[in-house]
Amino acid sequence: MRKILRLLAGAAVSAALALPSLAQHLGDVALSTTSINLATNLNCTSSPQNFITGTTPNFSNVGQIRHFLSIGAVTGIQKLRAEIDGIDNQGNVFRLSDQLETTGIGAGQSSTVAGSGNFPRIQVSVTCSPNTGTFSAAYAGDFGSLPITPGTYLSAQIDHVNFALAPANVGQADNGFQTPFGSSAGLLLFQFNGSSVAGATIGISCNSAGVAAAYTVLSTSAVANTTALQVFPIPAVACPLMNVQYGSPGGGTTVTAETIFAVPGLKNVNNGNAPLTGVDPCQSPDSLKQSQPINIVAAGTTSLVTLGTTQAIYVCGGSITVASSATTPGTVQFIAGTGATCGTGTVVLTGTMGTGTATAGIDAEPVVLPGGMTNFIAPLGNRLCVVAAGTTVNIQGYITYVQQ
Image (cartoon, rainbow, N blue to C red):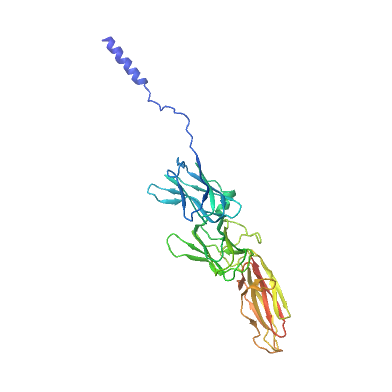
């Protein structure tokens, strides 16, 4: 009996001392990274070329959250758009990055873009043309949140080459590309390469997710018949997807269009103050106002404000007197254009203003341009001129303007 009691006591002690089993240490575990060369000097097809994890050889998804795409050795390409996408279990595609838009004519160029998100499959999509152009692409993925985007990542966000050295004798379009900050604010750079053509147009519109029709941001306007750089300010409008369209009357050699988006909080290089985007420059307290005297005593065309290749001239107000003339009415008219006296690509800004009658000896006719608002605009790349007419000319006064 004692033996049985001793056995039972020992079993009780063993049960009391028993500890839960611990998980076995299998070694240190680290998050994995992945990288791959997706394409090397691959020809464009003018259609999306998609590289997808699990489908493209050696392109794997190990659950990475940060995604990085580099596009290099871009040669002979007029248009290129690239992005990083996520694909869910139902096959829906979601854009995870900004859309990179670059080009390569002559020497190869490189650009980068980053995206974030954990999806079952990752896709890199590249669309470029013409089919004779080539590009190289590489992907890398790891873990963590996206850092501030400096260097070429920032350039890819704000600088979109819509088309480069594309034929000027046919229309060109870059439709539906994503804006980096949800706003259209920025600059449109346009240039004829080789030879220019009269009657061409450029315009910008935007699309939203719910409305099929595009809404205008920069009204289709004529571009000057010149090979000089032309810069068009783009108003700040809510703009998820942007369209840049060039209209051709036929002729010319090639055209290049490039959109540079304004970084939020960017200062105005003209006067150091932050401009109020979407506000009339003549009404904005952040615009630098200037004045120009008018003293014209002979018929003909006189240059008032010289051209700026990256600026337009907003006439904010003024006061002018036009003396009477015995033979023909004394008049004044504002025009814009290139050349020493606006003789090339002339744009008429006002009608003829003045006495309206040929009568000598009467008081000079006042011409008042209301202050506090833009009266008329000399387009980018143009100078502002005044045309004086009459037998005896005496036109005196001033204008105020903003140039930006």
